[in-house]
Image (tube, rainbow, N blue to C red):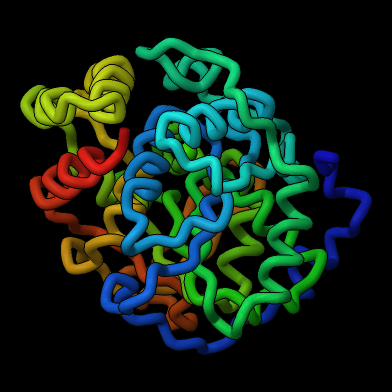
Length: 346
Ligand SMILES: [Ca+2]
């Protein structure tokens, strides 16, 4: 059953239950010989679809254990359906999809249908996938899986509001033992926000959840707008995906053609960012990215800066580092990777 309002569980847990600790950042994932065990928490979402296709294409490097879905770009019933559509496109019936929270912890729900379409994906034919959701709830799945996992073994990727992970951390802080690293798409510092002048959508959609995650003491890598707004599509890059000649390349090209139009107009960019897919690019080829350890805090106060990520890039406040903040990426390297990888799918 989807979890509802967080208020009943007490706000004490928001601030008191999780303490910062000085855990070292994990080393490059791609360096390990065995595929990295991974859970992807997602709210598809056009760029989520590209991210999931990229992740599911890389069986030699990423052992995707499950997709967990959350309300975000669109309502939970659509994000859950869209995640199952991607699973079918990628022909990966082995990957369960668990539905999670159908609304943020505390704030009023917001969606991004004007960017992603009313059902989360445009440019392709929507269908009801054959394979159903896994039985059980995403938050409980995260708790059970991370409690049972080998110490510091699981990578968690969050591509939407971080409600599911935050709820799991609050319900059972012991789950931290199983986490190797959290890699998240979200936040903005140098770039400014995309949903308000100050805030990026994923964090703005559930700032209290991101606050819990940043205070968890877990190793976190952040892929913010600062880097995603620099790693843009071009007509040539999309055309190369289409020219792969398989279903995945066509789906990615069709979705990106429809999706980037909004961002090109809205932000005056020469191409469109593929935010969430950048995160999987980082996991597969960390050497394509640059960033630094910083202190990040989330503004959860109502007002102009609600949902802003305060990334202390110059260590002005001298607070403990709690995240690696990525600011640079090799754009052509990323799109080359995406093209090579999607060719491995049906
Ligand atoms: Ca997303």
